Image 1 (cartoon, rainbow, N blue to C red):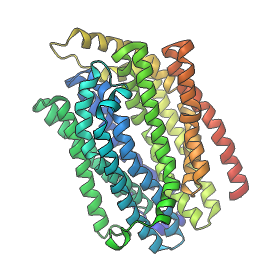
Image 2 (image 1 turned 60 degrees about the horizontal axis):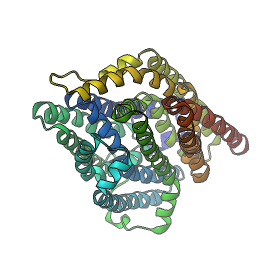
Image 3 (image 1 turned 180 degrees about the horizontal axis):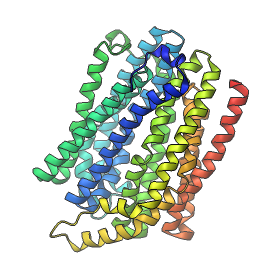
Image 4 (image 1 turned 180 degrees about the vertical axis):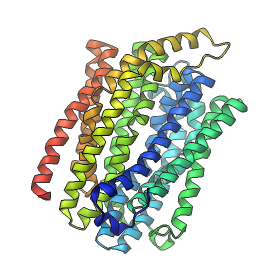
Length: 458
């Protein structure tokens, strides 16, 4: 898990580089995903299954604002990787400074808007019935920490673009471990309930922010925080935005999907059905961590070598990343197909004095989650091609194909499917929309990636 210098991205063997970049990225994503998973298990066991549904309502709103930082981070990281590959240090520094200013400006504005319209946003995202009050408590507190989350996401991608995956991994581990410890203290020991869960999340964001600041002020970073680069330059912000819009659009579509799914499922089965989706949503974040890790590790390798015009190495990195990700995805698939019932049971508490509503909700969730989970993950072995293909175009700065391929699965296929199929198949129509969208998006991505390799990398 050693860090590598920017120059090593263009000289070391691709397999070695991908392992060095992907392993810490995978570990970081694993810990972060475990945080979300265990956080939900704590909430489900110590507060109740309705509380899991409440968090599921809030996450797409807060994560969308946080994803603004990720979008700025990934868009700028693509520029920084290619600038370092071409030995343009000044452009890398100016891009980094603009990322900081742009992230602070846009996320603070979004948080102000989010707090102003809290009573409208929560019901719109499915926070209805008994879900509303718990969701409002969680949402209001967590939103205060979202600017820190955005800066963390931005900084993490920049750290990785420098070839320092170990530090990026630590930055992901800190808030995850901190959140779990604070969850235990604030929910279980001090009995603060939903407020405790929210403050644990917010404080953990700030802890990560302090570490990110330390990294860029230390000698570990080739990029320094300097006031002369903080003044926003339109041309740089435009380039960051054109690439970052890929990530932002993906998260915007994810937020729209949560909105649609929570409302469609609430209409089909009430709060209990939303809780089923909440558990599956946590597994979508957690189970695919090794595939996402390979994708994250692939980005700086492809970007640097493309900037250095080493196209054979770019092509090799594509094939190697797809192979590793496909193997890992297949292993994940096997586990989810074998143990869906046991996974669902982890989220359900059996504390004394549970209400009839909570008992009924738990029974419904335990009965319906396993079959739904098998459908949702049915196409997991083939998703590696789709993820790496879309990431490649983003890494080399081709914003339009990156955007279209990123939106292909969730926007062009999945959303129409969940709007149409449930009308004929009920809740089954919701669940089978996942593998159908995966299959169609993989075919489209494979076609365009093959064409790109043949025309521009051969």
